[in-house]
Image (cartoon, rainbow, N blue to C red):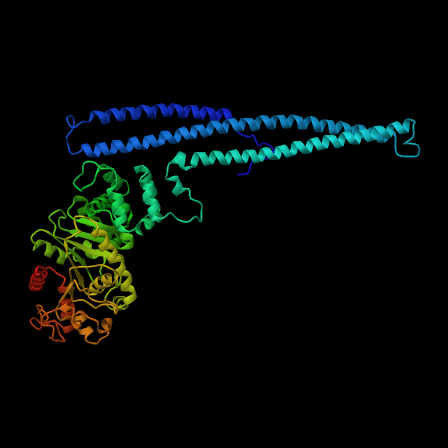
Length: 587
């Protein structure tokens, strides 16, 4: 708001000083609290407290102590700024008062001189002899003197007006200086360098944000990532190895069950959405972050369900209930989420226990039409769970769906437009790059680095897996479960073994036309080992126009569609295929 020219000294310096005095009382209270917290921290020695909750308590104590230190520093800077502002404002008020008095005197003098001149003109009007030596000549001299007086006074008034304009500028300046001091990085902490960036300024880089986060308090970090996706997007562009180095360099301390030190655990609790999605953060830390985020999401879903109409919004309620039930399992620890974001259709569930004994890591990528709801219904996880349960206990699987998949959100019939995405090299190149980044993210975790790796792609999922190889991912084994095909630029990695396990199904029938990935399909490529097609519970060649008669079988198209889904299921009918696949992995 522009400063008033009539009163550039408007304000209450005394009131500002009273405010500073009140804040100084608050500083004393904060100092007392900090001192008490310090004494508590010194008192809690291993001899006094050895329970499992001690680390969480000490982490919270340290975080609050740090926040209070930041608050004290900010208040002290604020007080200095307010004192200086009050003094400068008072000086402006004094100067303005002096100018007002001088201007009033000058205007009074001008008014008197103008009145005398007017009276003289009436008494001695212009005419012959007025400028002579007689009475008329004296009048002329008096008139000239009056005009000079008016001219002098008007010049003085102009100088006073110019000084008044300078006061307006001075007031605007001290206002701006005070605002800058109250809202700058010094008073508000490093967070202000992000939140108070000018409109249109270049966004901070991921490296800049990492450096800043090392100096932010936990409360600052929580605020930074609570309402804005921009910082998160900047961090997502970082090399996972860079993030991992930063993470490992955080303050050390005793580790919790997730391998987190006190500072790391506090960061995860402060911004779970950030650290639950940041490539380079260790797997178990991300699982912990998503567990915390899931608990908050469960609360949010419960509130939302209560607002929905049970009749007209039944479907929304059912969808929310399924998500809530699934996330409740994450909160309890029954399932482990490496990635979870419903709004962007991101979910990666980890199956198994990742620890120092882990020797084999599976990345399982589902196929066309895969959705979040498939995870909620425990459909997508079946092959990964079977592999884990039938291994020596040292296998961990990541069931992967990071972003929108081919055909997601569409029904397979009658809307078959999803086939365009499932057969699109450009769409799959983009998803393959995302999968390659996922592999790079888990690859910097010491518990995974050096383990044997297998990627399994069901249907379109194979196209995603092989596209990730083109984008730089590397696997020891790649398995096609009724895989769709590979992009034209894909080349097999010399260090990777490839195999296909399939029933004769609806996709195999389509591949025979040469229209699926232009014929670049697993069983048509020399890199993929394969045997004969597995036989499903119903012959794929059987054709019956009437499936309603008992014992008559199913129409061929339904049988072949069933077979395409069967390959990814943990059911007795699929056991021979799963066993042979597992034996191939273990060779």
